Amino acid sequence: MLLDIKQFGSAIKQIAEEKGISEQKIIETIDAAIASAYKKDYGKKGQIIRAKLDSQSGRILVWQVKYVVEGVDDEGYITGFVIKREDEAPFIKTSEDDETGDFKIKFNTEKHILLKEAQKINRELKPGDELTLPLEEKADFGRIAAQTAKQVIVQRLREAERESIADEYRKMVGTLVSGLVQRREGRAVYLDIGRTLGLLPFLEQSPLDNYSVGQRFRILILSVDETPKGPMVILSRSHPRLLEKLFELEVPEISAGSVLVKGVSREAGARSKIAVVSKESHVDPIGSLVGQKGIRVQTVINELSGEKIDIIEWSEDSSKFIANALSPAKVVDVKVLNQNKKHALVEVAEDQFSLAIGKRGQNVRLAAKLVGWKIDVRSPKEEMKAEEVEKTTEQLTTDDKQLVVK
Image (tube, rainbow, N blue to C red; front, side):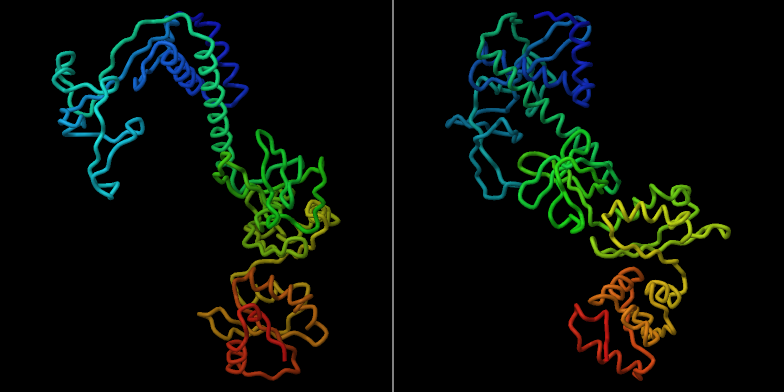
């Protein structure tokens, strides 16, 4: 069997570029297809046939593989050292323990050869080794064999392409990509992100977005999950890291490293807080994110369909950071109730109280997530000792522990 190696090599290269998979993987796929076609027309049941393209001569070499075994018992089962292989099924277990239990395999003359017979061909062979026996080259294959080869090539190339795409996007987890809405299936949205479609689950969507077909969004690659249909790229429009990556695109100071993002808290579709700090004294971290006439932050807000964003200056001083995090409310005083438990009591003016709490406690909740502290808010009219605040907080449910109102 002889191929035009130049023409073959050119075709392989073209397929590799189109599919984004290695040339070696394509050659292995074709080798497997040729072996399958050969067995269909010229092989016997139980035979293990393999093929290999000789890249120098253009010939395809075909051979049969037999496993070397020590012996056979009276019932026809292999004795001695046995390797359990995928192509050895079915086998009979003698123990329920798959890891350490023994198992029996029927001797098959088409795939097994006794040690004494194998050593007549090669003295160095031992039980568990593979003996290769060259087969006669064939130039013609029947229609069914050719179809089988074609199916093997198509299926394996499809699998290789899917795995290549999955590997590419696994390296991109946590990064930002642009996607075009292709279709909706129930609450799920599928977006074209380049080499494949990504899935945007309902829980990763922003309530403000309108996912119409043809609409383009910037989305975060959240993960690459294995599904029955193959790897699936999972996307997100609600993850806090999306906000960080959007600012990274718009703010050169973040890309250059002169401004650092220290934390993000977000309730997608409603409000977000991002804490930043400058590594250089002459760089204003908040001003860098806001931009001239607010153009930078407005670009990010537009990308998030109008979601409100508070830009907070990070501080090593926990009290100062907590005060900043409650922006836009102005804080009168911050008292650390328990440094180990990260619990603080914040005092605000009467007219700032509702602003500090926010709608349904949203502002104080986001501030608490941003700084990683439990924050209680009170106005100057409230006279509560630290012990009373602790006792009151312990009586609250987990969901209400971010807020104490008298």
